Length: 200
Image (cartoon, rainbow, N blue to C red; front, side, top):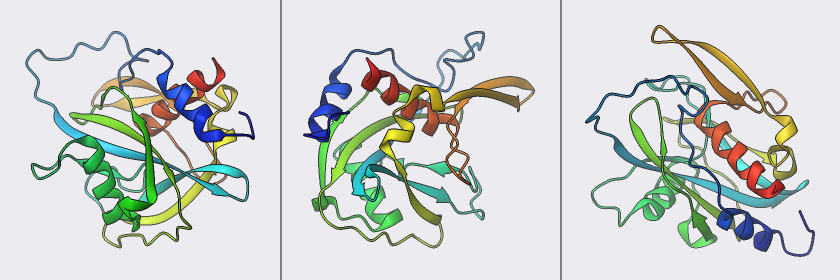
């Protein structure tokens, strides 16, 4: 990644063609039910300038949540009827979960929605955090807000494939550990897609 204009490099990566992602693309034998109803959702992939250059802001979900407790995730959630679309939903959720003002984010672009095993059709929204930002974790949803150097998650060699039994079937997925943080599932899959496009 060039030191001259990282946002331009990221925009170019987002515009490069690449295959769509889902929680099933490492599990090609999965048979999905016809007529399944997916709930629209959106996540913000926020990038900011930190001690290691550009960094990706991530959250550790509250261990008290019913769904995905303690997992590493982008700020985000379901698209409400009052949202104009996935971009507005991602910005709203980021404001609610980590206190990020929508006006401080320059949107770089979006990708095709990512189908999750939990029945969501999740649109990744990429943005640069323009102003100095001090996160305020929402106590009921977020245990921690932290950043990972973009150089770490932009390196395909940092990723590996693991697997576990889930609902009686063996499921494979990407992981990209960073220090004490075990980044996996849809979050790691989206970061792996970004790494592949940046390396192209």
